[in-house]
Image (cartoon, rainbow, N blue to C red; front, side, top):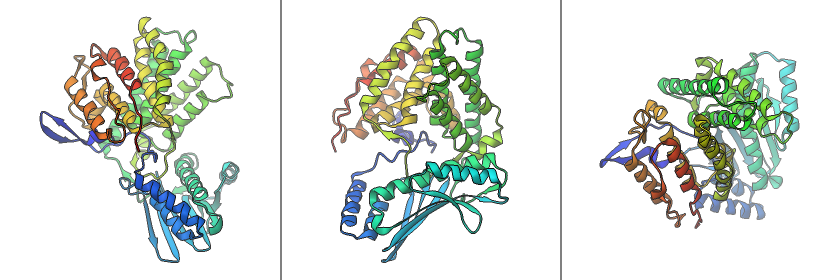
Length: 444
């Protein structure tokens, strides 16, 4: 959650906002103390003090806000646990070796196709492996001699194990009726109202996009790029704003993977048909299906890659001319989709610099007022009924973002005066250009 979603000033009154989370977790925003712990882990490993090296690795992994990693140091023995989404990962280390495992699900009735699936997954793993424990739990396991468990190896092994277990549990439960959920006591169910709002938002976004595809003025056969942008913008909005887990998350990731696959087996028109089919499948799911996938989780590893501001500049430079072209031609819904596509693509794939992330969120907060109001955020940054912007609040929030990050980014001086408030498209374009021109030279 961005810092300004917790508190902001409105006519000198301090208002606490709902504790709703947005976007994918990233472990790229660690404080300096965590990187100091990493250096200590490497030093202890070189001195063959393996338990101390593992302890410092756990310090590196711990996120105080997430409260995601815990351990007990018994001198000659360390046991620890960490959380990655829906999964609890446990491990223990001695002077001789380390073992880490995560239970994915329990098999009530063994099925050959399920076991074959697990064996196939093993071929894609580099450090860990799937196994069945004596209590019939599908478990992801990693073990190593202490002398071989360098901080680098251990980090990537635990990361692989944790993210694999987190990804597969909901997928296996969705596909196979012979398995049961396990180790879910740490999951916090979202409030019923929040689940309903998110479910409704997912359906509304998909329905609106599909209606534009089927009945809108743009010829999808002639301009598949515009249709692709519209559909992908929905994928990224759902991912960032609703944070689904399980089947829905995998569907969104599969759409993204297939569309951007380097193996161009599908034409642009066929790619759009693929996305339409996937989104229609999501539309057909029941409220109960979505409710099972909406829960509060803790995370230790991010799945997005850190990038510099230059990557965002390149994205805006590449896509802004397309947005302008559709605007000039009168295809306004397609033009409106481009900012969500640009920012959403970056949030889906990258751990962007923190100021960028906060500015991105401010855009979503402004451009999707009905959704945020339904969740309980107030006041609105934009009134869709009147077309009026709350310019005072937008400027105040930008100032808060600058103050929050000025120590690390001393050259952060957004050109607030360049923002145009005539209408949403003008605002979107000028706001994106303001982000583009930020100087995010970092001082550590």
